[in-house]
Length: 233
Ligand SMILES: *Cc1c(COP(=O)(O)O)cnc(C)c1O
Image (tube, rainbow, N blue to C red; front, side):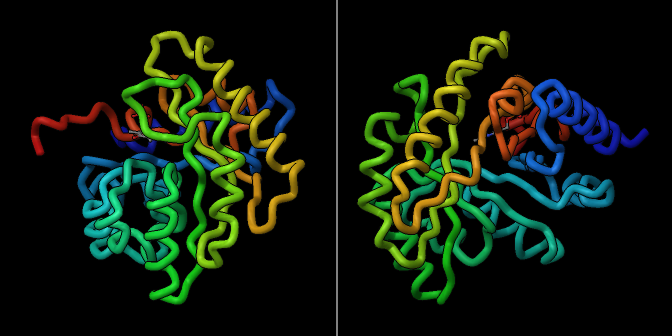
């Protein structure tokens, strides 16, 4: 009875099938295990099953888990990031998936310069225009990237989106497809220091559709660690 290992095997099998359906290499899709709210013991269980990429959405939680756990684990910042908490993340996370404002970019740039490193980031795009969500509108994304492209301690690696909550993953296909098309359009502009290698899209409910539409990173929490209990924290 090793729930996390079994869940990982199940998610892995579904990723492989989605890759087969869409003619993609399995190696083109990175699975990120979203460990937010979950204890270190569960993260170590996932690591024992071969998972080393973890997603967190709270800066202090990412910092604490980074400090507690082995240094070969890779931490992805996937949640809303306030400027005064950037210091917890830069130097610990391998990537910030949730860059949605110039002010935040400036703060990351300064912190990365101070720590003498280059921070890989993704621009978060709010594809469905949901007012409850952060992120750039598709129409402003290219201009945003041009404005931050001179920041030498940021490295834009691609785009990220959080699709709407839905019971029906097919409903999100259009947002994944549109994000990919946006990345293709931006890549064609050859903006200095702006790469469109990564598309971070798809969660437990819709990662297979996201892979079919070109996701290079899927962020799966519930499907690996089980339901989250925010009330218990
Ligand atoms: C929580 C979270 C996920 C994982 O959600 P699940 O539905 O549990 O897979 C993915 N991406 C972001 C940005 C999240 O905050």
